[in-house]
Length: 288
Image (tube, rainbow, N blue to C red; front, side, top):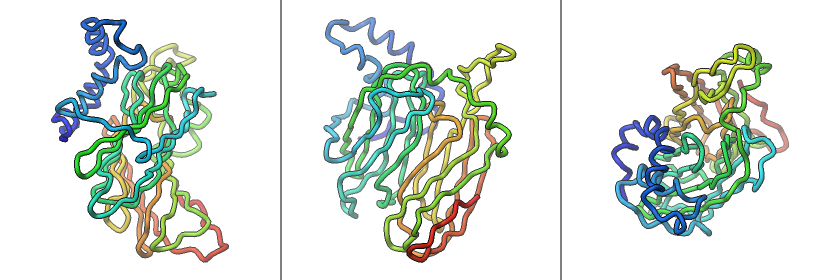
């Protein structure tokens, strides 16, 4: 199964904004009684990602999706994905999609792993604009596709204002790396990357001027360890402000973690951290 040319050429982020119109056109030509109202956008989204309608298998036993059924704050909805199958040289996850069907732009994240078989969990925070299915979809190296979905009741997350108080706390693009109490080479470790960025969706209204706040959001994030890809992320307005990514990685030895971020204004931010093994019982500090 091949990723569509639209997706591969990087123009998907612009085209996905048109999906509400495309979904309405699709629905108009279908028998409304035969279409699950909550699923009506999914066929259009699926066809943008893949060249042809793929066979998508039930992801139970392959990918776990953990997200609340009803969100307290639709602008900051925690979501976690966990790989449930062992990854080997013969069979491994090539990429993972996080899709929020009814958001103005449904792309929460497209994670590519470039042959890295050590990412077993990914967690982040997303915006949800209206009641919707949230989907975790993995594509294996053999082309097989598996999907898990959950229905979430939340609304208004994409137009919720970004907290002004936090704007001065750190400069734009500044990053933090949080590590576990013990970093052990050769074993799976969980890390967290936080990026200072408003991730404005273009749908928020400034409370003082009453004008629309221009869109300005993270589009790409690449994380490497000793030069090898941990993950390569393409994202859009559906990530919450100050994007946060938890992920697992296996450092074969001490080395350097590097994060490169590009936003919608083509601003670029890069930060590196030296990673050293930590003695058992001794905590690793947050690294700035």
